[in-house]
Amino acid sequence: MEPRFLLLSDVAAELNVSDSQVYHMVRSGELPAIKIGGRGQWRVERARLEDYIQQKYAETAEWVRGNPLTDRDTE
Image (cartoon, rainbow, N blue to C red):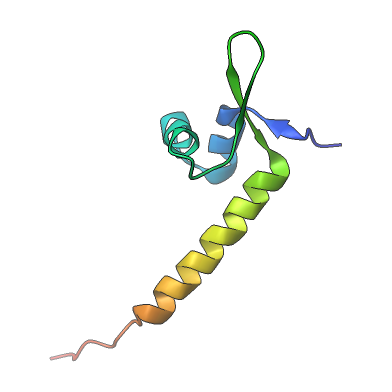
């Protein structure tokens, strides 16, 4: 059974980005997370990460629709 909550380093590995990029996403509110424990360690719920990924797929699809790839004239 997969854990419900992930470390920021686990999220970084899932998304193939740096730990600092995930920290920025969390601190900016882009990726929902919670702080737990006496030292206030960040955790991201797996379901929230999956929601985030789906949201990014939708945003990317919209961007692609609005920015179609055009053929360049070959000389």
